[in-house]
Length: 310
Image (cartoon, rainbow, N blue to C red):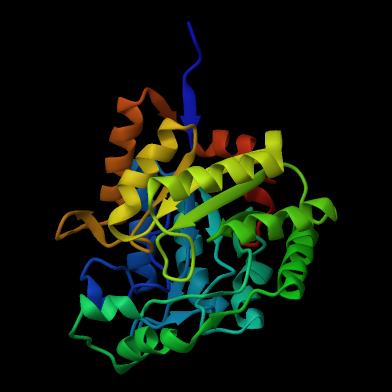
């Protein structure tokens, strides 16, 4: 009998793109984030990509002390791989963005692979009412925002990760980001399996047409060959359709309220776990098994949860 394929589901239950006023289901407090992450893991997510928010107003924060409560609760309740952001928010400095990953030494951390325009302001056409002043400003200010990830920034993050035994989810928003990643592979600063999260649909990055997905895959496969571990992240309404196309081609997948608030046309997702269950149903229909956390650790060659600092 032929061996069934396996796919890693990454879930990002919170993040810096959306604001709390956009959905009542977006977790903000440590307890809410922990619950959302644990529910997503129980639904089938092997990797949990985590941000923190200031519980007073939902503002994205990289204060390690805001991460600590939910990291301890999640790690006590599930064996899922915890992936801590180094992206934080485009409005933060690189030094701010690195604090949680430096403090907690996770198995996996995200790493954005190039500076880019990061246009969130089109969301203002859909969302009109905000509870906190910072939310509208956060979106409006992205008209004049460069998300800074220079070669020196990336090298610094890679060296810190190597010292801590942390591997990376390389977030690639465009073709140039794949070539930036290849540069660091060629220099020996990135070794082992290269976990490439191809991101589609952010204004400033590649689009969300299936042809864009094909182009990213062809390029990454050519650049990284057997070391390539592919995952697909579609933003907004593109989340499930692009993940489905990617999964049919052999990719891993990422879902969660960080990337999309929706479960269907005009229908807010009640939780990130609901999105995990939706893509899990797709994988099942494609005869693709969902990777367990242990299998994800093996596929990505991670150090193991015991060697983290939380």
